[in-house]
Image (cartoon, rainbow, N blue to C red; front, top):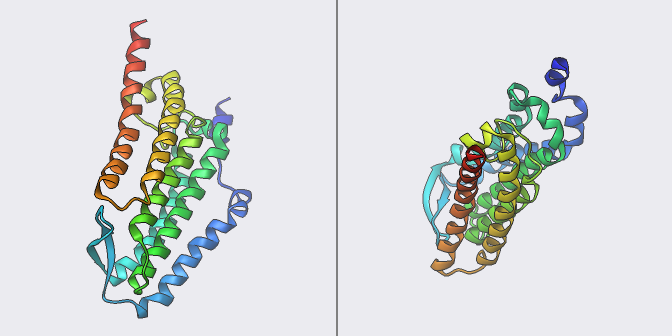
Length: 227
């Protein structure tokens, strides 16, 4: 039984072969960085406020090369960190959902990088709309698969109460997934609205999506303990 736990999650050629589009995206981002670098200004946009206005700039080298490296780093982190997770054997129970996480983050980072480079090159792009839509869609996808996450120390809603009790973990993720889906749909509705109040509603939804599952996990754990 112990041997089974040690070999339940592995990174092999078959996994990497199935995810060749992700490697193509990450390689394309790095190639784009090399090609675009000479044509970009010394400072590139790095952050936007709630009104979609640039409020921070990064040095060109950092702004051009860091996002592709970050995308690669996140992918490798998702790929290899489960190997040292004490709950490593549980990853086999949500292999599909975990693969969606890898795909979602790499595609999210890739689209965001393309949009940022277009703005840096002077193209007219509604970056505020794009970021809000991308974030909402990413959270919608994660929320849709959250109920499949099994007990682990790496991905999911990791509170002292979910980590201490597998029943609390499962119930919290099923409930949290519904909250994330509902909140993401509200965010998608708010995304095209340019008024400042819609941005506050968007941010409020993100906060609610983060806080409610945490509170729920505590209340459920306390109820189970009282029994």
